[in-house]
Length: 242
Image (cartoon, rainbow, N blue to C red; front, side, top):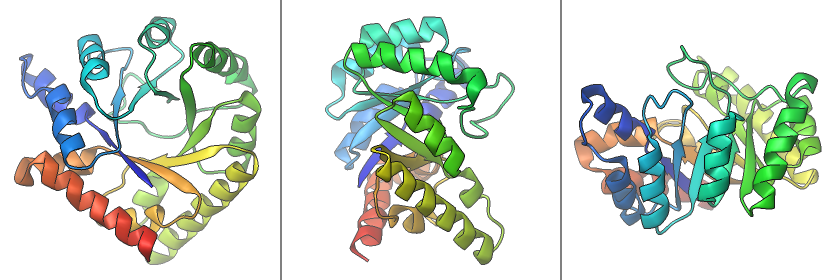
């Protein structure tokens, strides 16, 4: 299983003071040294954290694949076509949200725009993914749009208040993974995953990539980012071996 580290929150700290540190690109280098299999950044329309310059530098310096999260905003889409990251994951955005609150709407109202965006990125050789809720209808609708992969939103699992609810959400993630794999989609997962809750998701057969940001960046304040990434990798390996 691949572990992609999201360095958005490093940029959040930088933007709070409007200065040039901490640098998310330097953080990405250290995450790679700690064992990250890839780096994720979200270029939001409002540029609240990651900036265009960050993505450009990251694509020139990263030794691992870069996953660019984005919306179907035309300006950002054109940048993705020019930059050609290894992977692009379409995610929803709301101006007032603190972080992504759920999966994409892949219903009829947005299907044409998403399909067009996916086709444009495929045309320039970019691997694509859709960030969706782990329900079977969303998986089927996503497959019809033609991405390479889906990323299952694990927020409801992460926010579960009881063991029974957590088991229910893992079962839901497993069913969505099985269906997606049967439809020819690669399966990723992410959102709200921490050192305390990652193992059951990492153990799901067929899930091949996790995107984790906040928990790793939070721990890195105390331990350093290389150690924080190594600790997460060890948990994921333990889940796969168990």
